[in-house]
Length: 175
Image (tube, rainbow, N blue to C red; front, side):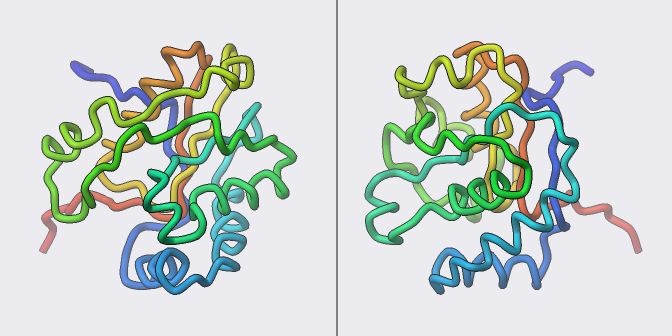
């Protein structure tokens, strides 16, 4: 492979579609936070039991304030309950507000996210040498995950796999 992926595996409960989209939209914007537990129960079925710590993809503080919660952190907490893996919810932080990525192509997404994440130095020991599970609600292009993975691997993570409720699959181009 000319460009190997940064991640050490992607684990998603379902393929992204109308039902998955509806569920995540209700979680994020309809304040149906109990859906995070449902997502976690479904994700855990797709995960190998080999992680030391779960770290959610962070929201920028302005988005967190307006929404009132981070859906990835709620899903990570549910995974923690089911797997017995600690959550380091504040290990990563979003250093600047990024535009909504919906509708942007892969290159524009990467550009928008470049340098947007940092590791809180107080959490370096929670990451160094560890098998990290990076948790998000939807895995789309991988741009957000890759930006987070770069930071985690620079901090010494032994591996970083991605867990998401839904994964957007590339179009197959079939009939």
